[in-house]
Image 1 (spheres, helix red, strand yellow):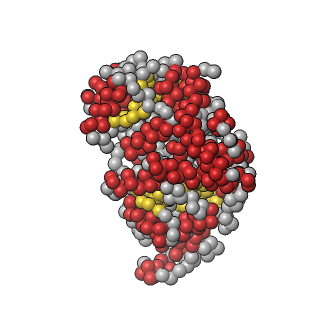
Image 2 (cartoon, helix red, strand yellow):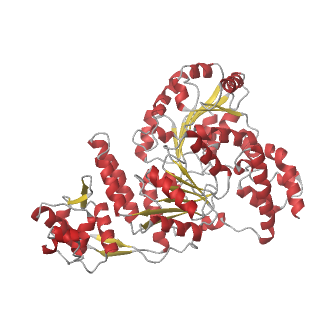
Image 3 (cartoon, rainbow, N blue to C red):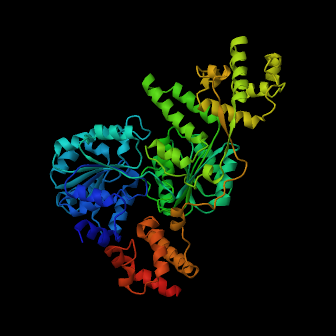
Length: 605
């Protein structure tokens, strides 16, 4: 057995590497630089943890996640790995002790926040010890146009200049080809070997629905499909986070808020509760989630449209890290499109930056409005091709209709044209829809809009259907949003529709709810139910794990993942040797928890 394989078995309790893990580990152990793209839950951390244990010296892990460093270190300590961190949460005595352990070579891994490397005392400290490798986690934070950009990451290109012999491995779960090139350039990793795993997460079911009382839609999802499950709900604004968390709590669902407007103590407490307690829902802005190593997040819901496919993929990827069936659910509507367009128009930065933001939004809208397999569209964004439809997204489970919306588009664009050119007026979608439906509202009468030739010519569609038309016209660039009030105007492309030179295909939403039973073969295998006779043992093991985790002040998954407990319950080992063959039970955990696990099984038997 090679040394990395031996470490994998004895420390982490796994018999074999997954995907590219072995090639990455061997490359870094041999002293090579690497840029690793691997989806959330794909086992990125092993790619630097094992080389750090095999190579001589201490592995330095650069991570932006100060709030999670303690949990990361606790998880490694449970495996018998000598790990520590240096960050602003420690008092001077704790820092001095950690520095002394590093210099003495008494650590295997040391976690640092990137901002610490700006302080000259940190490189000086590192120079006093032996470094086995540098791991740059969440490497997409170096991308200046990414939503997780951290300026301190730009300093990390200097690592190679100061320690040219030390291998570097940069890792991230999300990056298009352009972002990957930016990471390589900014971190001075152009000569590194690139490892790009499949972005596919077959256990996640992607669903996108039109907004219609979104909080009620969310509540229905949670009550019918995810009762008692842990999950994350993303909202665009802080006030929306607070209101949604409060409302869910009133409806009997345990929900906590998380956003940058809360004080640091509240954020830390809420995050710790989410990681340590079962079945909590975290309602958050995108400030929450990066690096969250909670394996049993069963759903990620978006109540507002994400700004980019990269952001959407990264946020939804926090569901189902354990490989079991999970849901990525998004509600979006016309107002989302209007709001995002307005935010782009008023954003800081030059025209090129605004164009880039517009392209990101266009790609996100295309994913929302597609009549094809969602997963195919999502993977295509990352230059990956799916050979057949996935069978586990809403468009596969209940295919939407595509219809010829050319005449409807012409009617709506004509109304916008008449208001603009004939009346020198611009209005939002609501007023135009009222005109097309022939509604004599106070506003219609006030502006004499019932006298327009387009008044009442759109009664074949109802208001909801017209809103769908407008949303898709905006998505296709056939309408534009202008000004603070979200008024509508025509684009250059509108002329081709009005001139009957372009057909407009639109998506008609299904009234039926997507069936939740359909799953891919992979997901079915992952979700294989416990044998009936093993279920009581599994629950007893979960109770034991919960009590042990509380006693030690760590998240339950630090003790054992659910997948490991399932295997233990199914195999019902009666000796430590038998228990040691279970995946996820390494030597240290066997010594630490083995007898308690056997006693729990025996007490239940």
